[in-house]
Structures are given as C-alpha cells and as structure tokens.
Length: 407
Ligand SMILES: Cc1ncc(COP(=O)(O)O)c(C=O)c1O
Image (cartoon, rainbow, N blue to C red; front, side, top):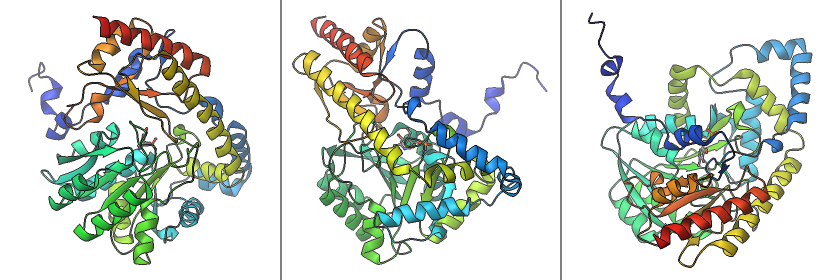
C-alpha cells in the first residue's frame, strides 16, 4: 500500500455530499473572547432544570432495580413510559395516536435523518420552505434530492407555490410550522389546513418538525399538522403524517432525546434504520428525561417562555431604536430567532466581517436557502444572552450596518 496516500480519497461518495454545518464551524470561531453572539440559537443554560435532573438522578440511581435497567441496553423503540408520555402529550394537542406510533431518537436531528433515509433516493424531489432549517438540508443532502424551495410569507408557504410544488410529486415535504428556524414564521390555521389537504390529495408524506412549538410567547397554540391529519382520517395510520419533536429546546439538548411519530409501518422501518445506526438512544437519559418531564413541566415551560419573551422584546425594541431606514426584521410569536433583512444590494457576509471587528456575531442567512440565492438576510438569536448584551449587541450591529451602507 502506498503510505503517502491521502485517506480522503478513500472516503465514500456520501462523504463528499455531507459537509460540516457552517453554523457549528462559525460557533467554534466565535466561542471565545468578549464577542456578543447572536449566532447560536442554543437554549439559555440557567433554564436547564438542574434541581429536577438531580432529583431524577437520585431516584434512578437510588433504586437498585431501576439503576440496573437504566444502565442496560434497551429496545430500539425507546423507554415505554416516555413513549406513553409523548403520545399523551400529542393526544392532548389533538393527534389520534398511541405509544406504538412513537420512536425515541437522538434529538429531532436523528428523526429528520431517519425519515430522509426512508423516503429519499438520489434525484427525488423534496419540498422545503425558502428559507428552511439548515440541519434538515444537511441531513437531506446525504441522500441527494432535488429541492423544491417554496416561498413563504408571514403565514407560511404560499398556497400557489405549494400547489405547483405538489404537482411535481415530491417524495417528502418538510415543514417547521411554529417559529421556524431561521425566520421565525408561524403557519396560520388556514395554511396548515391547506398543507394537510394538499399532501393528502397528492399523496405526499409530510415531515413536521415541531422543535419550537412549545416556546410560544403570545397568542394561542395552533394545531400541529399531525393533529389535523390524523383527525381528518380518524387515525394516524391513514395518510402519511410524520412528526418530529425534541426536548432540546424545552429541557436540555445535552440529553439528546427527541422523537418521531408516524404510522406503524413507517415506525417499523425507522426502527430498523436506527438499530443499524446506534441500537437505541441512551437508556439512562430516557429514564431521567421521563422523570424530569412527568412532574412540574408546565411551570418549567412558563419560566422558559417568560425569560425568552423578555429577550425577544429587548431585541425588537433595540432594533427599532437603532437600525437605519431600509432594514427590516420579523416579529416572531415564539422560538429563538429574529430574521433581519438588509436593504439590497447589501450582503450579509460583508456585514458579518464588519460586525466581527466590533465583536458581534450572527449567522448570515444564505446558508438556509437551498440555492444560497438570497444574500441580504441575517439570523439573530436572542435566547442565550442577557438583555443588556442584546441592547449593546444591537447597537454595535446597527453601527456596522450604517458603516456598510455608507461605504
Ligand atoms: C428546526 C429544528 N429542528 C431540529 C433541530 C435539532 O434539534 P435536536 O437537538 O433535537 O436534534 C433544531 C436545532 O436547532 C432545529 O432548529
């Protein structure tokens, strides 16, 4: 064997298609020093329910039978009481399902990957919003789809564009109906109904990603697509509605506990894929998570919402006070992000370079578009920085924008 051979040339074709997430690479660069970062989108660590986690650890490790179970292999489907909890939660939101429809995954990210593996062959079409969650694009890319990127307004995907996309028979449609990452939009009730109706009519599976739906700061929660779809048929087993969820944003991402909910034949095949990937999600983390969420979860969510609402408001106020005319931004009803648009032809990458010199970071929005075609947008996260940092950060960002405009 030629010892000077570079190992990269032995990598599979798939390796060439899946690169590092730009956001994660960017976070590595800016993770140090006195940078005020709007880039992350991670939850506020002081909200992690440490006391409840401590209590859960005591309970699990203090009981010889439970701790033996917690440290042992388990079934791929997941810890039954946690599956029951998720089924009960989604039933309370209107979905018609049982715990057999739930598979526990390593975060919603694994749910997206497993579903992509199930439906997408090279050249298949996948319909997504324009823009959409970068991590989903990263997962889909490995399976080489062609994207149908559907424009949105503040109510969701535009009906005409959505119908035109459906006529092109995509294999899958991926939607984040609540406080979408990156642009914070929430689908209206009418658009949800329309989406479900069209998916049925054209026989296209919907993958609904509900990563943020419990983080609503105003207004009433809207029905998840899985509820609308399963109610229309009287059961989740008819039609093909798939729902991915996670405890990453509401409890703590370090547990890596998410879920996928789907008709049983879909779950059975996803279980086979998951077995091949990692056998099952961490037993002890699933059991701890069950203990953490089965008591006092509503009060915990209220605390999260109150803190994030205050930070969202601080960011919106600071933007209104400081940004020059021509700059526009979203007003999200929940979630962790504000989406900013610079007046054209300004480029968010140029603003990024300008901002870094002022110790400010954010994510340039082009990464969230399948074709990178939109260059003037920025994703600003308000979740893990104090209101003082938000005010100071927005002031500096506005100065950078003004400098860019006057160049
Ligand atoms: C829309 C969306 N879906 C899924 C995920 C992944 O979440 P998890 O930590 O559960 O894998 C994220 C994380 O940021 C997200 O924004």
